[in-house]
Amino acid sequence: MSLRDYKLFGAVLAFFAIYAFVILWNTWPIQEMSVAKSGVFGDSFGALTALFSGLAFAGLLTTIWQQKEEIALTRKEIRDQHFDNILFRMLEMHNNIVTDIDLRADGSNTSLQEGYLFSTGRDCFENFHEDITAIYLEKSKEEHSLEEILNNTYEEFWNLRKKDLGHYFRNLYNIFKFIKNSDIEDKKTYSNLVRAQLSDYELSILFYNCISKYGRERFKPLIEEFHILNNLPQELLLSENHKRFYSENAFI
Image (cartoon, rainbow, N blue to C red; front, side, top):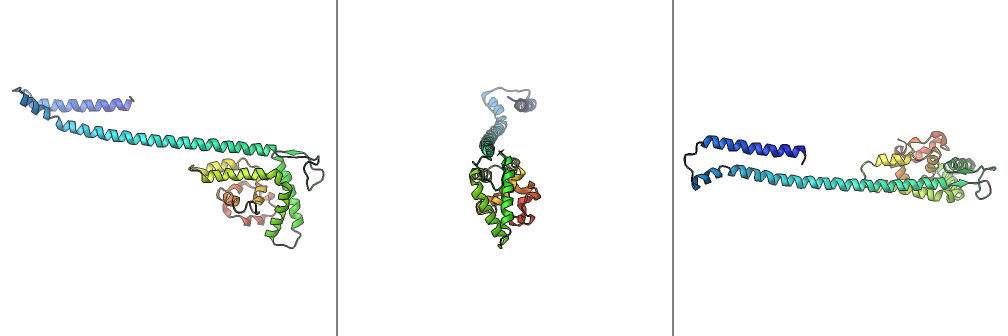
């Protein structure tokens, strides 16, 4: 029993003692002792018995309600822990995917630039940014609308790098989709945690992926909802006016 339970038990005993004392005070000395008289004396405790029977029932209901609340809380903790476990496994997989990306100058990977240096992991995204920049500079010379130029730019870049980035973007998309579809309350905290895993150059490639046909319909709404481009350096955009393809929510 807890200290609160002992205090409650003591209060009940004290109440009974005081009540009995008052009855005895008003009936003492007892002039006649008989079955009838003792019955009347016992009946004087009837109201008190009914009161505590009601309190006992109320206590039972309170206990049931508290247990229900504790069970609900336990279920929520289990659900949240399950969510955490899955999310962190997905993040671990994401980091493994990034680590496994490599670009070699031995001919196993092609590049727009001569003398392409060996790169691994997140360093590759700087090379990807150089690739997409070079393609954009060529495409921007054509007589097309800005939207067509960007579509053509990313299409050529994707054909060049889809073997390196296909798995990367599928996994990243599923991480944000998992957060959105979960019952977790603080989704912003978890989306910020994922965003913190992305380097500046990753964000720049993600920016252009999500305004292309490969990410426009499904991934771009998640980018805007979770403010994923908030920390994207403006100098990594091919042009600052490309921001107009997103809602302001993506950058706040």
